[in-house]
Length: 274
Ligand code: HPA
Image (cartoon, rainbow, N blue to C red; front, top):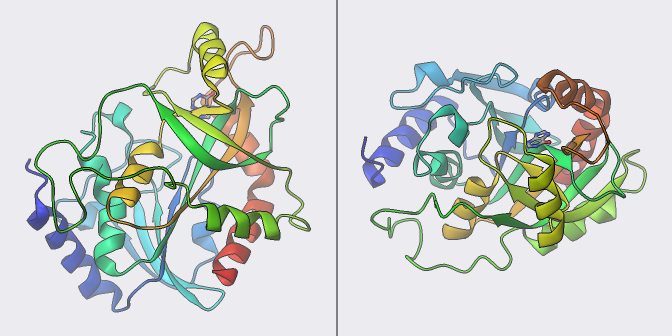
């Protein structure tokens, strides 16, 4: 499959015809954080399987549909179900969600994920505003011929997790009932959770949380000049942080569930204030 401009344009044209609106905000929902999608008013739902050329998310806790509708008076498009490299998807394909948003006219992206806490002052249920990321993998969603329609070959990523949006989120945090953190997200490809030694390395390198998504989307947003807010829900302490603890996907889902209502309300407040 060639991920050229026509590939993205065809998908966007198909979606545009069906949603009949220009969404301002694009939201990508992480593991166990799907409840936000249920709060979208007047939704138009497009299952991924019905969009020609669109991949299908294979992770059980990811729904696999695009939902377009209203959130606090703003037009929003939401990806309930994201794609990950560990599912076998090429890094270049992982640029699709943000490029689709871009072609639909989205001006702000909000991406969420479940993550393991590396910073020992974090607790399960905290929400971390992502300030930056570390990705040791040399892969990039922008590898291959540059698509000039989206952005330049060489692009700056120093404000990839847009400070203005983090400041906005911080200003809305009091009263949200959420314990808010800010820090660096480190990407591991998965699907295995990390080793305790990898987590010690991550901490030494300056990571506060680890996860298996988001960085491709953030890089794509930086490439096409889209402001982005990234938020991690700390669903577990990372490997080795709690002696003898075992990490499993069910626990990740339960922890995400436990703060889901507050997190959804917080995200809706952010959208309102954009
Ligand atoms: N590691 C990687 N990804 C994750 C974790 C973790 O501990 N928790 C939730 N997603």
